[in-house]
Image (cartoon, rainbow, N blue to C red; front, side, top):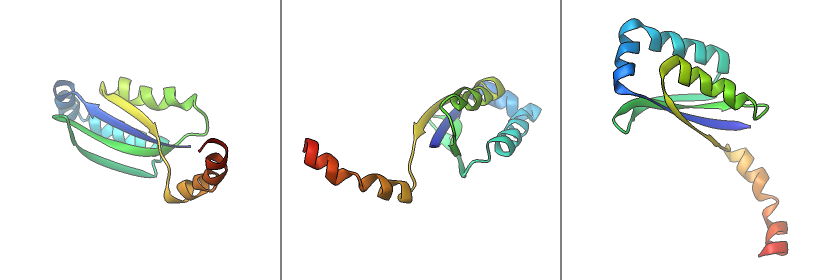
Length: 103
């Protein structure tokens, strides 16, 4: 399942992590280990942040993904299941039956 992991780093601890090289180290490890389908970085809510699109085979992987950001960067995160266009098309194929039964 594709999951968007949105993250934000607090300014204070983010500044320290940049100065010590920890941000670069953690993101290098995250990219190598999670192999995100996409990764974007941007300011959000006055903090450094971004999002990754990762594939999870099992919901238990939420812990493994989250802890990389919590422990590695003192970051806050949000995780949202997402679909690509092909996934949406596949899902929409079942809508007529749902409309028939519930609509």
